[in-house]
Image (cartoon, rainbow, N blue to C red):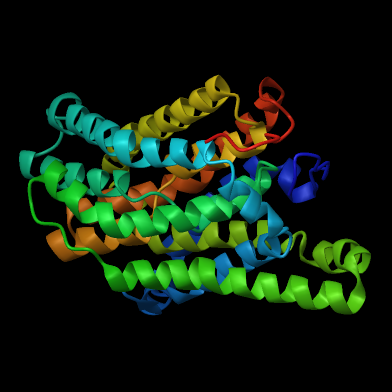
Length: 355
């Protein structure tokens, strides 16, 4: 994906909002009518990493990885402003804005409606989300935004490493308790969701271009995989709502009360990153992933820590799950916003690195 990408929107992409709404409804209905299905899907998990969801994520991300021109990755390392902007927002601002929104909503705005002990658990779950920036799904949002996939790969790698260092200290400060780092969950999600499709994509691209030529690869092989990513995204959405349909129907008001501050946080962090990128003169292709990686979250890590600290049926675990449920529709709305506002950014990548 480059600055000159003119790939038209396909049928699924053009009506993606409609498909998302239908998938959410379908997932809830299936989960309600066939409650055993959710138990079967949920049972196929290792350290909060769900294997069926992981397969769908592979089908989402592999078609994107094969299109990455890997020299873009080296070029991204030479233009540090987007990466530095992401790191500052993700680790210097986002955890504290999430803590603020969680605190004001759970302990003040919703205080008349929520018991104090549950408010504390919801607050904790939201904070755990705020200190876990996204890894795998940001590839999908960047791809749909026609952004710089090489930069996205660099930022995902850097954020994954930074999470190992900063997740526990930040969480301990913000929550006032010692926070465990789910090394196994983090390693599995990064390796399974990012590493496997990355290596498979790189090997496929290298081998097939060598054997068949660049034109065949772009026009035949990439085209065959073109719709797979979107279909896998919609199937993932159905699966997520199957898994959580019972929770949604049982506690709809609580879900809404948790979702509102999370949605506000998402838009606020995205808006901050987008405005800062425009102020710094960063190109649209770099501004979109820079803003989106901060707006979305690494749910497996947040859910794993919430369950470890508070229990599987806790309010903290529920808050982390709500973050997962709102991720896809909210981020797709931001993708559409990015595509409609790309003219406000420089269209050409930076010509030289800025130290």
